[in-house]
Image (tube, rainbow, N blue to C red; front, top):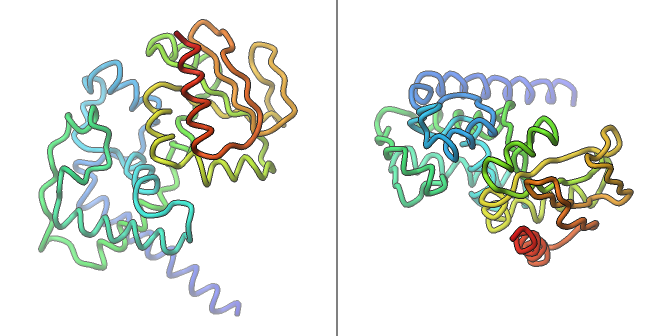
Length: 255
């Protein structure tokens, strides 16, 4: 078993290396590598793309969007990888603006990519798809943007007139992981969070909550407006329908 395991690990590492080479040779001229998601949002929401002047999604944007929007993120990982690989292969050979994974206000800054038909092999497509899927520096968590701290999130909330959503969790919290896998990846939830909220994850086993807040239940979702006023403090794990209602209630209380 050990020689077989070593061989599989070697093949996986080799495939990842080949994928990076394909990306650097055929994708990197348009798709920049890692840029923090907070900086990307600032670029589009506050500077109309004049800050970064992106011509295509960054590598971490691609990784996040593909895993969020293609196939069944909550299902079998191997099947999900195949679904993503199939989408990447089809899109690269037959680009279609209607199939873009970008938000409309972001996509307006990009041109539809040219087809790479005849310029890339099936093996290269598989390799670069795997590389994008496993991109190790992606900054977008399943539940949204990770900010360095509450003060930074509060400054961003004031600029964008958004609500901070603190997700209080611990690393060994089963129901935190359950919500991340089953609810916080849902398209309606992701869209609403991106539109009206600034998510901030805090591991309460290592970091205290801001504003003197306390909670012993995880996950807990605490909604705070741009003036540092607590709008809602909701403990528990929720299904998609109920969590969407919680988000909408927080938005109503902001007004």
